[in-house]
Length: 94
Image 1: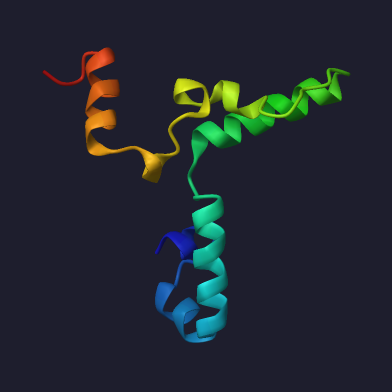
Image 2 (image 1 turned 135 degrees about the vertical axis):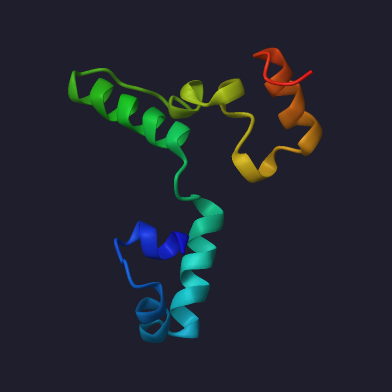
């Protein structure tokens, strides 16, 4: 369903019928490298592009400055304990 949403396909079943096993494997590999819906990463990339457009020279790792924890956490890499610790910092758990 996430793949269909990403490519703007409303009919998930039709998309599944058109895709080959090889294509699904490629999308799965791509998702591991760059999960869809990673709003933090998109925001960091947008800031880097805007900065470059105005003549700044953002160095390597510039995007990570806009990630929670300076880029330390990337969704699936965060353990449940780390996630709860972060939520406690902002008062969302006991």
